[in-house]
Length: 254
Image (cartoon, rainbow, N blue to C red; front, side, top):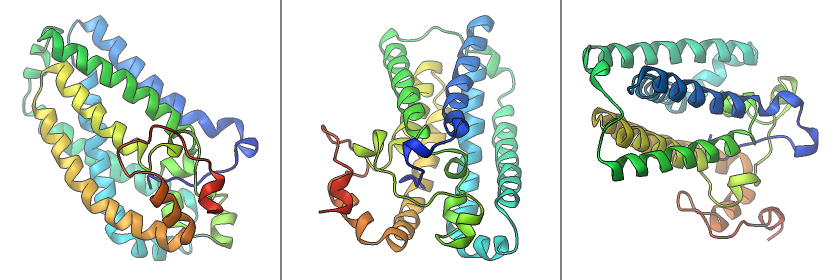
């Protein structure tokens, strides 16, 4: 879910921020590798595979939340992690297989392109990655891997050590869905940088999936957090960030 649940900052273990640093590292590796190759190969492949896999996971998760919850009732959070990795692998494989039909086209790309589009793409990429790292840093592994959506509040969530608190910190004080914002701008930035307009098709597919996901996700969050989430929605825009951050206390104490 985009509006995350998490532990208070003082209670976060050291490994809580590790997904954020891995996210940053993945882009350093891809761009560094493409620099060595002298052409765009790793970044577009990474974006296509990662977000293609994410679309598949979301389509298999949100429309079937209750079924997944029933299946996980006698299982632990690690059962879901294994299933999710499997779904991600299948989705990524399918997307990369489709991309692979282009074959040598991947090796024909170079750094060259209209400088204005390249500059805009580079700026979008840097800003999106940094904001994404900031947002993911508020979450921890349970939230990154959707576990909170599948283990409702109560003893079962506590037993699995899955935090169940509405996050109103970091970028979530400005906008409700910072990661969805950065997902879309990252895909767009990759299209601008690589001049591969097939990536635009991926962006359109992501947006189409997101329309479905948000409706189900926000319904779930209203049921879970009630008046607190309703108040949060009143104060914080869905996609267009506020100019000033809200005071987290305003959400729980109108």
